[in-house]
Amino acid sequence: MNEALDKQTMSWDNELRSWYKLAVKALAFASPVSIGIESTHFRLLLETSPAGINMNVVMLLIHNMDKRTANEMNVSIENWAQVLQVNSQILHRWNVMTEPTRKKILKEVELMIQPKRIISN
Image 1: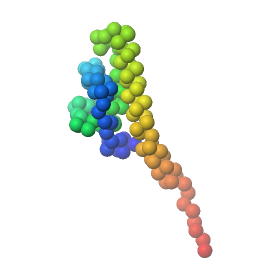
Image 2: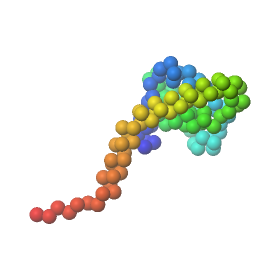
Image 3: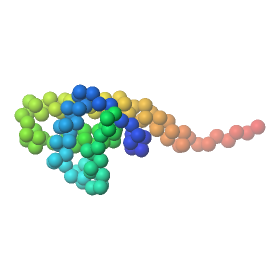
Image 4: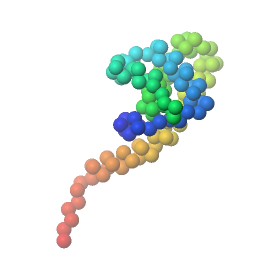
């Protein structure tokens, strides 16, 4: 799944742009270990393209944002609630975008698991 999602991009829109700024700010409180990546890959979380953000990067940033607190991010509880709502909306968008890939991979796995049928004449 990671290989397939590494080839996909979530396109920029106003919501994603504002969320991304906060998601990058939240990286100040993360470490490669806390995110579950190799230290050499941490810089990849900052890479974007004019088209958007890599789908694997989006998921890592979503999870990192969920680990943060209002105090860490230096915002009020009310503002933090709004930030987490946007984070949830980005997650929903990510889930919708990945559903076709998930179904395709599941089908491929099912085909690999099925016992080979012997065709007799």
